[in-house]
Image (cartoon, rainbow, N blue to C red; front, side, top):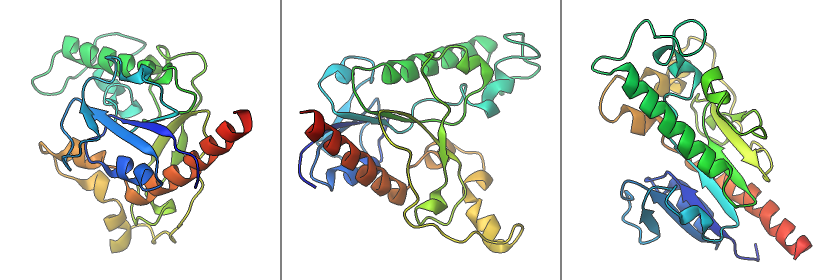
Length: 231
């Protein structure tokens, strides 16, 4: 592929997405409040809202923004019946104000990325609950849902992509699905069967290399073609 893009991979420490895009010869950087696992000098340790979004990127892919309080499964901790009534239960050791602070943080990061002055944006996030949707920009579409097994990984994990200026991902290495209830099917549900622990959230949100390689090829191809066409 000819033509070099400036690409920012937000909210990633693993380097999986950064390396997939960089393998195509583009100028790729990642950022997160934590250090990169691979020690890359192309990783900026910062809050993504603190200015890096305005540094002239052609494409932004945000991998793991905080979603615990924005997703449907997290709604029960945010509100009881209706909207913003006290929840019936809270996670152990957490207060309702803790939940609200995490919710506001998630909304702030997501909206900052979606409204960034970048022509092509992809944000990985599950389908949102109604409280989160109420706070989103009016132009936010429904997420495009893909599965790891579309890209050669024998696993189930619905992955939502909110896309602006980019095409939906097309399967590159689809695998035949196992029989429901079989040992293989249970193995494919590994992510959903992880026991509680300090590493659970990080491991559950880790990117799939095959999916990232597909994203890099498909999104960069579209971006390069558009830039050539429009000058």
